[in-house]
Length: 216
Image 1 (cartoon, one colour):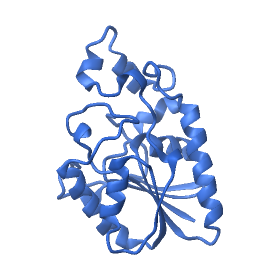
Image 2 (tube, rainbow, N blue to C red; image 1 turned 90 degrees about the vertical axis):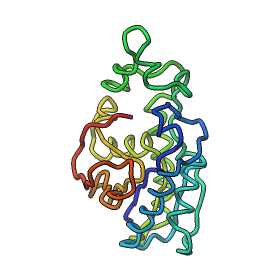
Image 3 (cartoon, one colour; image 1 turned 45 degrees about the horizontal axis):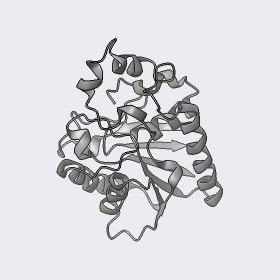
Image 4 (tube, helix red, strand yellow; image 1 turned 120 degrees about the vertical axis):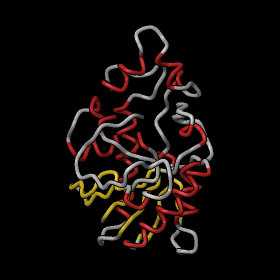
């Protein structure tokens, strides 16, 4: 099995750097354009099924990217984004302004310095791995399988594949609309955004095969 892990397009909260976590937030116009571009990138592959987070920004990304492709979409609850607890709905600047800059501490060490009430990263990893194990069992013959989910979900899985600490989580850059390819147990491509070079919000086109800095 080859896993094609796509992060949803930019949401209206991504656009203004507001922390969303498990909050259900729609795509922005840029996010919809990124989803169209993702669909073009997926033409290099032959996904037989798309497994999708239940949150609207992931569902809409999958629907746009796969429009007309005849690929069935299966919603998987375990692929939802990690909860950020008390920080959901707050802007990055609002959290940075709190005593001691807890946002900065979280970016540097998300396992050790989580947001108040956030879902523990080991719990996130456990549910994501359970979902991927079920998906793998359903595709024993080397199929291409698409997963449309979130930056936190994909980063947690990448930490598992790379064998690195969850404290390195946000050093793995996973951009909106990006594509990460895993042929378990090998990470093939991390954060491929070459298809987004003209879609806005992606910055310089890049296809990374190693971890890089990330601002969540």
